[in-house]
Length: 206
Image 1 (cartoon, one colour):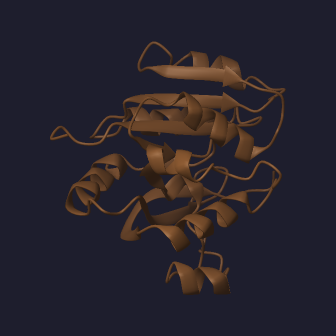
Image 2: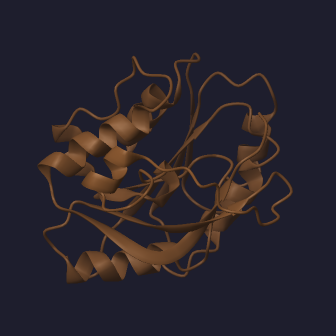
């Protein structure tokens, strides 16, 4: 449609009360607004729910709680509830920059065949200060994505109907589930990297 993509933001959250407020605020600050935010609380034992509730007056925020099943099941659950035609993944400790969805929107309109876009990023620590880029290198990512690392979930927006066709993240995997899924997708559909740094990826000792 001419008015552009409708983004459903899916945030899996597990004991993220320290960070999820800033994460949600970064969505509320977007120059091109999200249609909705869906927070899937994956069995948190902290005050994640209370923090999320503080924002529920400002935007359509869906909050659902499930028993702890890991990030794959949480993201899949979130997508199943989404009403937008594009899913924007965001981890509960990362922070988008204000132009993230606007930039994705522009790329989507110019590249109608592409089903998944991901972008560049900065690295931050738990206080939000810049971290040096870790020199992680993934040889498979180099081949498939022409990039040294696999797209982190918070960098990715993708068509909801393609997610449904590809059955989403493998819930058996508790780690590297994003790597496995994005590799599977990139082998089957056109994907595109956007060099703009549009979010901050938080890395810290959990």
